[in-house]
Picture 1 (cartoon, rainbow, N blue to C red):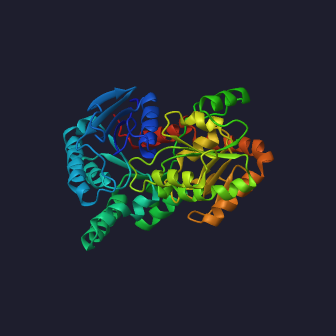
Picture 2 (picture 1 turned 180 degrees about the vertical axis):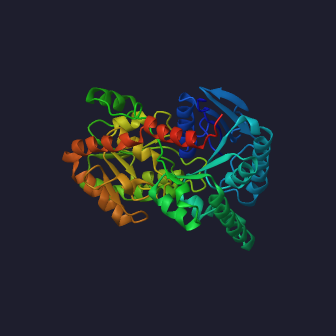
Picture 3 (picture 1 turned 90 degrees about the vertical axis):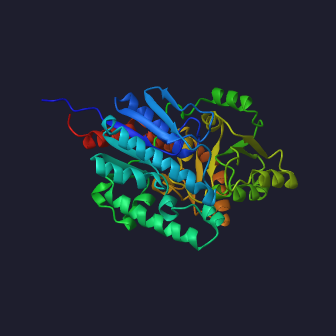
Length: 413
């Protein structure tokens, strides 16, 4: 009997770590490396977002190729159109010229890459798998900020056209991966055959995002310059309006009157976000005299250490594709307070392994945070269940699901 051939995958993504540190880029890297370690042939084709990055490099067992044009496109309006067209044309050329080198095309995101990948894959007899990264990719083919810059009927017409094209490619993809129940339900509106929709969640490295003992926790607090004797409430993410951080900060003075021991640490920056509100937050902290109650820690390459050192994690986001940092917090055995966005409603149970509230609702958010802080004696029990919840998202478990899928799609030798 002929042994099955190892899958050979070209992974297309507009973001990849390094240098991108956003959720899409991080998870693409995490899964690509996991698959490479399992014997899957992986070549990543991504954009040259930062011009200084190498055009080609081998990262572990993953071949990475960065394609022009360089620079960021989100929120650029009409200026992004020629650059994005140039990118997808270059990707199309690679897929056509190198057809002997791969069996499966994996695409991160629904914005533009599937428009090229799906028809070319069908033409060449290849399998094409689309990972939908966010429900907003289905709702807004062109982001709201870009539409605002386009400012006119032509931009709205283009958005409707892209939505129609999305519907067509979703129907013709070999497989569509939904990372959350929300995305799976929205996909039903696009009418892809149900048998082609597969639920696979995002993955977290639980060997890195893991709880530590009290002695190590105190050491980390000193290293990170956390104030002594305070209950550390931690936010990690972009400092942008869509992340709900304005609601978090503006509600802090009221919470401080009831819980004066609480101290908010905000890890991240607004740099590069179309709705950057970092300067506004800093101005508010100064105006309200909150410098001793809120720490702006800035960008960090050691998020796991902040999570290990904290007492409570908060995620007030208006929307999420999955909410990867939330699961990383659960992995570190942190009680969490989060809005019911992304995959959070699927695994967070208020008072059991965290606290859930409605998004874009200031009163609901403040009430949930109040409830969580008022139940501090129960945090150790909640933390244990939080860690148990995270275990189903561990990288080996999720990679197993991808390996099974890719082997099923790989043609025999």
